Amino acid sequence: MSFINYSSREINCKIVYYGPGLCGKTTNLQYVYKKTNPDQKGKLISLATETERTLFFDFLPLALGDIKGFKVRFHLYTVPGQVFYAASRKLILKGVDGVVFVADSQIERMEANIESLEDLRINLGEQGYDLDKLPYTVQYNKRDLPNVAPVDSMNKLLNPRNVPHFEGIAVTGPGVFETLKNVAKQVLIELKKHY
Amino acid sequence: MSGSDLIMYEEEFSRIDDELQRLYVQTNAKVVFLVDKNGQLIASAGETRDIDTTSLASLTAGNIAATGGIARLLGEKEFTILFHEGEKDNIHISLIGQRVILVVIFDKRSSLGLVRLRVKKASEALVKIFNDITTKSEKEKSVDSFDESPFAEISDEDIDNLFR
Ligand SMILES: Nc1nc2c(ncn2[C@@H]2O[C@H](COP(=O)(O)OP(=O)(O)O)[C@@H](O)[C@H]2O)c(=O)[nH]1
Ligand SMILES: [Mg+2]
Image (cartoon, rainbow over all chains, first blue to last red; front, top):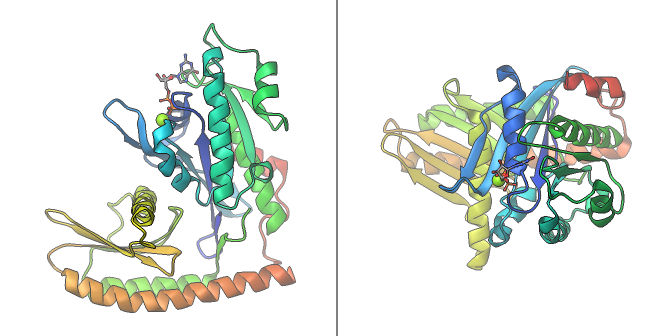
């Protein structure tokens, strides 16, 4: 649910980064935060446990610029990946405008990727959303590691609809902005269709 | 996008603004603000300069969502009022018409009783305004008469420019 304010001339959109625990969702936001001008970003808020695992969500507001005189803001959220935080994940998907699925490219995490993707579909469904109709981008993260699955086979497995997908190394940055830019673009194109 | 997009027009925005200003004055609060359930700040009144309202909005919505989750587990529909007491400042959070969240931050210049009373009044007025907004945006959508729409002519270039 985007929030369009004709009075203050602002558009706010919500983008959620989803994926299994430790795939690099928080790292994506940290990189975006690090590389964005101070005047374009708010605080990066992390509700994390003492061991820095996301407990509820991370939140990063970005004010990127103007389109036709409207200030465009994206609110980026991540969900906690661990299985037992299912309830929190559902809450964060409320009102989502676009989804990034961050997959962990390590071969031994394929099972976890599949599970998380199914969880995403179910949770979206419960809120009345259909993943096939939402702005949606996939990121194959951790491409720097030695034990990664080939992108082709990951794409067959996790992205049969072949939505836009990017290889990422969130710790150092490659793919992070490409992913964000792609999903943001889809969100704005969707807005254009409706208003 | 779902049909629940919130579209705010000049007229309703200024009505909301008036309502928040009134509440701010009447409760002697530090800050009053209104957030949608998804964590986006709608409007505010008071000493907002030193407060990170964007973060506050997102966390407040998270708070309401989490307690809403707890409520459902207990078989309650929703907790409509939350109150947090601090050493200096207190925060009163209330859910309005199932869709927006009204937050009042106050200190000892005010009191919980006063805030409660005034929030109740303001809520009624705000519910009405939001109903008007819903009616209006449905009407606008159906007649497709949105000559002011900034989105109709968005180009790829506009979008690319955002990420320069
Ligand atoms: N080698 C490598 N490690 C990564 C990459 N992205 C994230 N990590 C690491 O993976 C761990 C979990 O990342 P985090 O962002 O907290 O995962 P989250 O649970 O999805 O939020 C951290 O130690 C990160 O430094 C990457 O692209 N390559
Ligand atoms: Mg995390």
